[in-house]
Amino acid sequence: MHRLLALSLLAALPAFAQPKPAQLIPAQSEIAFTTRQMGVPVEGRFGRFSATIALDPKKPEAGSVAFTIDTASARFGAPELDGEVGKPTWLASAKFPQATFQSGTIKAAGPGRYEVAGKLTIKGAAQDIVVPVALAQNGANGANGTATGSFTLKRLAFRIGEGEWADTSMLADDVQVRFKLALGGLAAP
Image (cartoon, rainbow, N blue to C red; front, side, top):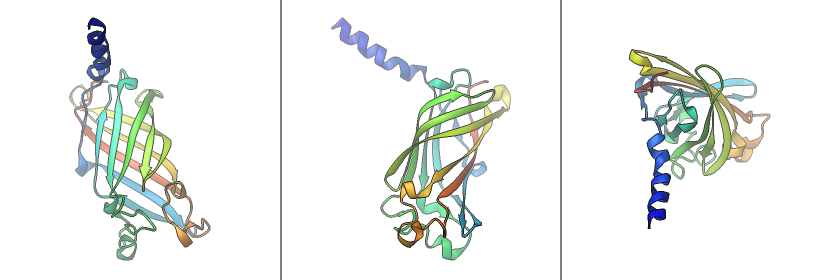
């Protein structure tokens, strides 16, 4: 009985060690992406997303990051492209309404810099990625801040652009993803 209680308490300790989640400020945040169609850059962005970010800059390894992106909110700013992006060939928003990222580990990579490793899932396909993140803290005790970063994903690994669009001479396989996240309630640096 005592051993079971001790194991239960030990299992609960990591939950207590996790930092308090920061609050995402959506109106000041963005997730954008760039692809190349026949060598010409095509810019887009997601209009709706949420995040749970728990990070203590003094103990980043105890932190976690989770994102949910509404795939139907992808926009290029051109009606003909905006009408296509949610279709099954592309993001299949009806079948896969969300793309997600869940961190596995967070490592310090220098002052205010981190490497966040985790699983990105789009259209039901999951890939392990490492995202470099820079965190600039400000405000009282560094409670506010901005997390920025970028990474490249291979769209075909997620079945984005199937059929005739799988031809990378027409549409590049590389998609550059950039983010700027305004955060409140961060742990002091």
